[in-house]
Image 1: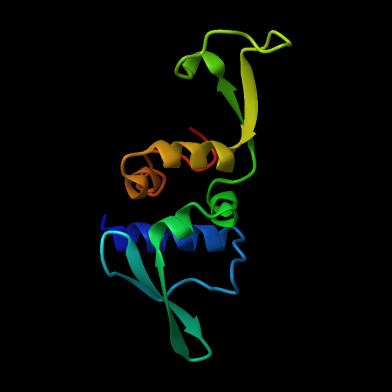
Image 2: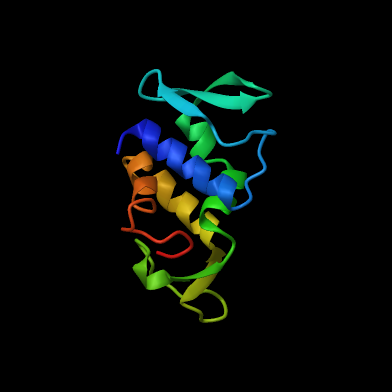
Length: 130
């Protein structure tokens, strides 16, 4: 999948799940300018408005993440975390995060964030789950 296709499909999924962001609607097309910048062509009363922004501004946006991955709580096992050595003050070894927060953390750690998103578009990942 091209980066443009990943972004367009991801945005469409987020809009389908209730994304209300900047008064936008689903982009009619997206064009990659360079490794970070994209031009989004947003329908606007019979024409298209061009909006240039980095893909990071889109995929790291909390409203986008909430619509894309959802609010369902995800249980995190602390033993799966690097450098986990001690229990918290209640003796627990896990905690819960909304799915969108968990996936934003994983997205920030990913070497290729757009490819991280792609797995949820191709069936390798399940939005709201692992």
